[in-house]
Image (cartoon, rainbow, N blue to C red; front, side, top):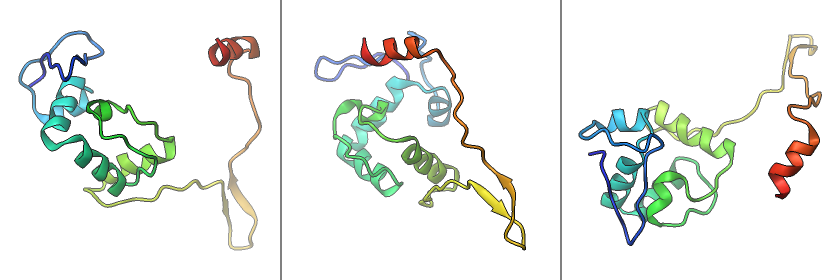
Length: 132
């Protein structure tokens, strides 16, 4: 059920600021409905959510708090990739890795990833984001 929920004075909200009412778990997951995620986390227990995250490849410390369902504990992109890959593979734990080069039979690079830096935003704007 996507609707208002309050836990110990904390009331999570959906990004849309509205509620969808009765929805399937699949619909809630695909629409990122925060209140449903929090309800499921509370029913199973935040500690169980943290344990499942660890089994799926999240290695960062996970605090068993109500907001764990909304990503309150920090993780890396690589860990998130492992978690989502486990969902996509039917529950199989996946250890993601990066491929930076593919070589042919002669050992020469035929496909490589360029690591040349490119500025996405001007440095003063980035400074404001990080240090303000």
